[in-house]
Image (tube, rainbow, N blue to C red; front, top):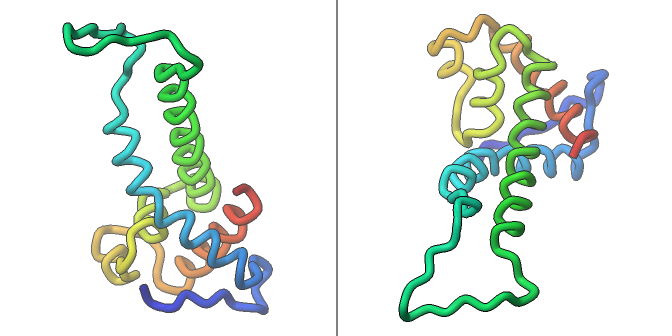
Length: 135
């Protein structure tokens, strides 16, 4: 990952450790999407096999799965809602820029982003500032 350095004289300046935490938190977005799609909905019922016997203990797998799904969905919604707040007209470019490592601004502009380099960098810094306050 290229060095992402926050600009100190910006109104959206975020101190180094918080900025890095926000950057790495956002880079987990593709993992959350993948995990959310792989979590099956086990609330439909339990399949009993002849070789397996399920006992009712303290562990409730359906509840654990539901809580994990809610946790992941809340993280995804937090990131997406913050991107919509910062860049309401085209949040998909900001989401791609902050969640995919190695995406260059030129790639986003070529994909149709309506911002040039400096306004996009300002929006990205604003996004990281807001997300560091929300996580």
